[in-house]
Image 1 (tube, helix red, strand yellow):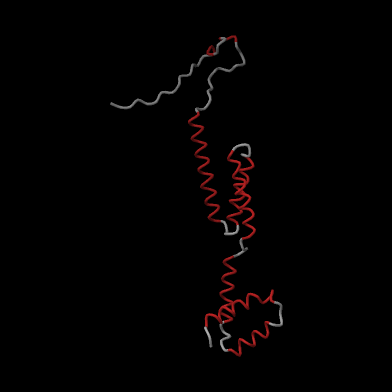
Image 2 (cartoon, one colour):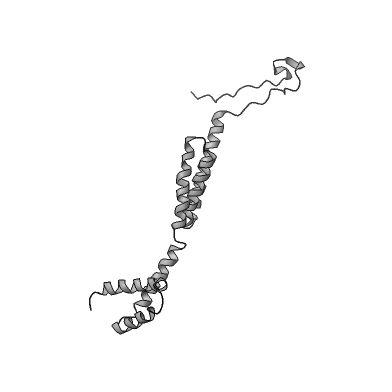
Length: 163
């Protein structure tokens, strides 16, 4: 025994399908029917899923500074569009993400690689005389310019231990 195929609604293919018979012109033939709600819901869910997958891929491809900016923009726009419903509260975390995007360094990978290279170069000043000469040179400039160099030298001196 097989399951029967789901039967669709039958459509009457005559012009007298309207309530007024053939005298009612301008109402169409009665051949169109609205799409079923389940089909609309399925398309809506599929579209939302594809949009979420696209946003996840975009977030993964974005640089670290742009990730909170992207999340903040999406949440803020969603909160503005849905501001009359309780979902509109997502605008608050969206704005927090936008503010936090300003606090992320511009290029953390480049900054860390540059600092490692600087540490290697400063490690070449190994004798106490060389370190004193370098500190005398650094004393000629303000601390705002040489702060990072002084910090690296202090860490290297602490790591080397007492001499």
